[in-house]
Amino acid sequence: MEKSNDNFFEKVYAIARQIPYGKVTSYGAIAKALGTARSARMVGWAMNAAHNLEDVPAHRVVNRKGLLTGKHHFEGTNLMQQLLESEGIIVVENQIIDFEKHFWIPEIQI
Image (tube, rainbow, N blue to C red; front, side, top):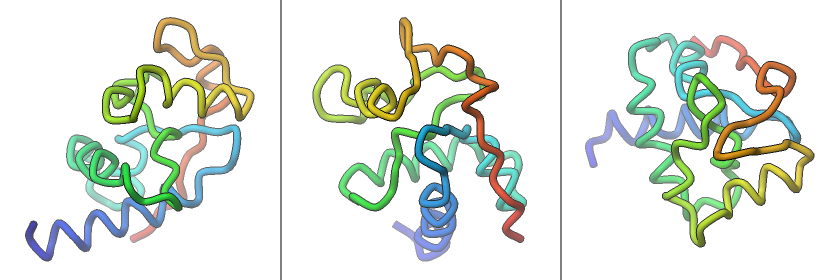
């Protein structure tokens, strides 16, 4: 992996670590906070690479509609959903219920 990607991934992780318990954010919201609004997909790659980083709550990052699009990157079939539900977030058919209520907007980091 290139150095620039490593640096970008670390910035993504720094924001993900700030997501409060019981809240979620989106790949695009993180990208926007980093000043790279068009790099939501790269934020997704960073979240995929975070599966072995215990201090990065990757389960709290979902797509812009509140869908658990990254769930297949977690061990087991429903781990992402179980982690969210343990924080009081209701998920039905891979969709966060009351998504707007649980949505957290990251601070601009640039």
